[in-house]
Length: 120
Image 1 (cartoon, rainbow, N blue to C red):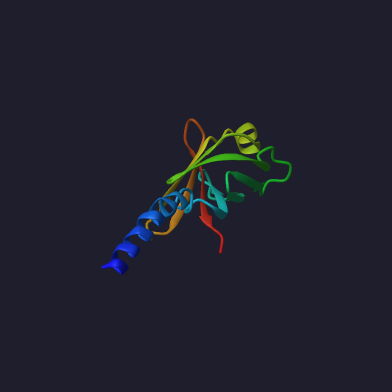
Image 2 (cartoon, rainbow, N blue to C red; image 1 turned 120 degrees about the vertical axis):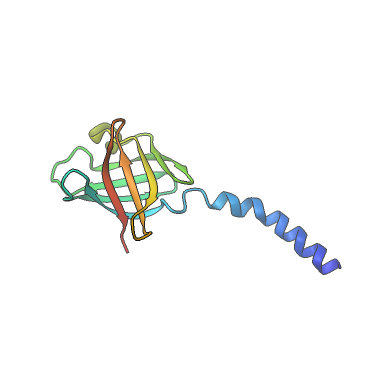
């Protein structure tokens, strides 16, 4: 009985930490992005620990650079940086494609402009 009680206590203590570590898990990492308008390569996006870096495939693009994000369980909100000021991108939502694979949809205030897939 003591062992069962001790295991229950350990599980109860670990539960809040496990729940907190899930925030942003699916969004963090490296993503290859394509433009929704014509399917061409748009750039590479890296999101990690509240910050991001974006390298546009278009030379001299004002969207290239870094900034900060607010992490959420289903995506991010872009707070500062070149994607916000140079491209008007405000948020990204984690979704699934028709094959059930992760995709990250990047939005301006008007529409979805980029679709990103994990780079492995």
